[in-house]
Every structure is written in C-alpha cells, then in structure tokens.
Length: 430
Image 1 (cartoon, one colour):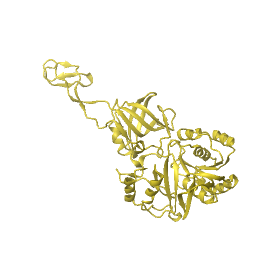
Image 2 (cartoon, one colour):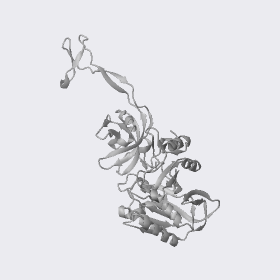
Image 3 (cartoon, one colour):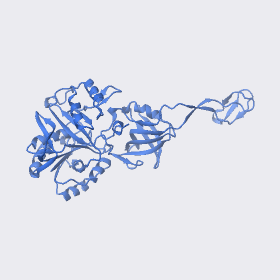
Image 4 (cartoon, one colour):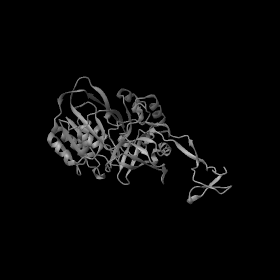
C-alpha cells in the first residue's frame, strides 16, 4: 500500500518530510516497507515551494529482518524489505487525511494532495513532473485507472507531486537523513557546530553538499523556522548514519532516513533549450565576452543549435562567476541549467569547458610600410598614419596570444548555491 503526499508546506513554515514522520507515528500499527521516498520535482516550476519535494511511503505488515531507519520521539522506526500483509486502505486514508488536515499550511497557500494506492502510477508521470509540467487532469485519469483513493485540499495541486513521487522507479539514487527539532525550539536559532559539520564532510567521502569549504559555511540546515534541524545526504546509507550522528548540535527530537533522487540530474533534458521553466544540458559556443551587471550577476551569450541564448551566473554562485568571467568567444562548452521565461535566460547549474579558443591581445600599432616608423590610429576613419612620414596603412595591429584563466574541465557553483537535484561533480567521479 503506497501513501504519497505533496504541497503541504509553505515558503514560511512546515515541511512535507515532517508530515511523513507524523504519518508514520499515526499509522504505527503498520510497518515501513523499504525506505520513505523524498522525491524532488521540477525545480523550475514557478509555483514551487522551497525544495519542491514530494513524499511516498509504503506500508504494511513487514516480513524478514528489520532495519532501523529512524527514531520518532524516542520510538525506533524499522523498515522491512518484504511484505507479509498489505495495509487497510480505508484505515490509512482516514488517518492520513486527519494528519494532513491538521498540519498542512493551507492558510499560507499550500494546496495539499494525498494519494493511496496498491499499485504505482505509470513511470512517465515521474519523468514528466521532474522535467516538465504535468496537467492535473492527466493525473486524475491515471489515479482513476488505478482505483486509487485521493484527497485534495485548496485545489489539490499536490496530487500531481504525490502521483509523481509514487511513480518514481530509481535509475540513480541517493540517501538523506533528516533530523527534526523539538517543538518548543521551532522558530529559534538552530544550534549546530559548524566545525563538526566540516570534519564530517572531510571524513565521510560518500556524503555530499554538506559544507562549503570556500566560505566556511555549512549547507545542511534550512534558513526558515520549519521543523527541520539538519539533513545529511550521501551515497552509502551505512556511512550516512555515522556521519549524521557525528554532528554536534542541539538534541534532535526525531530523525528519519529517506531514499531520494537528490543529486541525480534527473531534471535535465538533453538538447538545446526550448520551452521555459525546464532544465537542459546541451552544447554551445561562447559568442560574447561575459559582462557583469548590477547586483554582481555575470551574463554572456552562447550559440546553440537553436540559435543564440543568454546565460547567467547569478551573484549567489560566488566564485563560480570568476570561471564564467574567464570565458571567451569561441570556447566550446557543455552547459547545464534552468531556462527562465522572462527574461529568456539560462540559469547555469554547472558547466564543462570542452575546448578553449586562443585569445590574442593588441600589443602595438603596425609599423609604417614606407619608412618603418611608429604609427597611430586614425580613429573612426580607420587604419593608421605614420608619425614620421605621414604614410597611411591598413595593416592590422600587432597582437600576441595571452594565457587563458580558464582551462578545459568541469566547474560548478559552491555548495550553498547548488540545487537539490543537480548532480555534484563529486558524484560524477570528477
């Protein structure tokens, strides 16, 4: 029995993963089958909340050897690999509906959706939701085909994300342990020792996106008054548990491990950008010298198979902008990023410099072809005139090749400026 939910939080508060822990508590008569799934969806949709993540649980009576995957208010949470008996859908629906009705932030703009089904939706609903835009009518038709139970609040836009999370069949996967604060601490400053986060990041190589060593900032804690204390992501669930518990912080009231599509690049469409509000990976050639505009954003234009396109490295990407500033016309790139509708600009997530073009710089005016004397530019008239004999020449200035500041290779923004779904170079073996 699969239970999926989405769009329960707001930009200000709550967290859909926290509601998952409440569901597990309320449905304690059943076991978790496999890990809870935290599925991030299209990061470019205009109406997304903070992380655009949906949740899916599988519940039943477990069979086999249990594995501890969390702790909720001093009660251990176990996961089983197989099912001995399915959960009662009517009971699950009644309990889940009550939990979401009480905790979802509908008064702050949330539009929750709850789906309960014994069968998964077609896999295409995940790929459409992580890479594009899904119509609610298509989702409702699929849920009707499955005979699923569903509830929507305030329009029920969350039914789309819930269906997509349930439809996910991992090609690539990562894990995240999320810890949660005691209720009385919500809204107060989080107590986390950054030095312990730095040490964990250095000592646990299978973790990623935890600490920005360039700025000395940790990247595991949110900046909102939500229930989350911190989250640690990684590729090895066993090492992940040791990593999370090595961090010195205020005592977490809960923790839970999730299976996730974070850091997988599942959101990227291969090919030159077309429709906006989607993310792409494609080849391009730098067409203009990068320029810095107000606010510290760096813009440049590339030529693609679909024509010219403006690209941007925004101020939060910090040192990544220096790489972009070093690009020159003729450089061949592989670009990764989100296409905005207005202005039509690609927001860079990372890039590969495939080849650099030679850069030449003027070092002197041409010598006079008559007497060999020095010349000076004639300005708008074009050409150069000899200072000694007055002869004119159309010879070009003397240039020399200068060293490039950017070499072929891969480049990405600092940890604090990366998207949830963007695959870090570390995970790419680079």
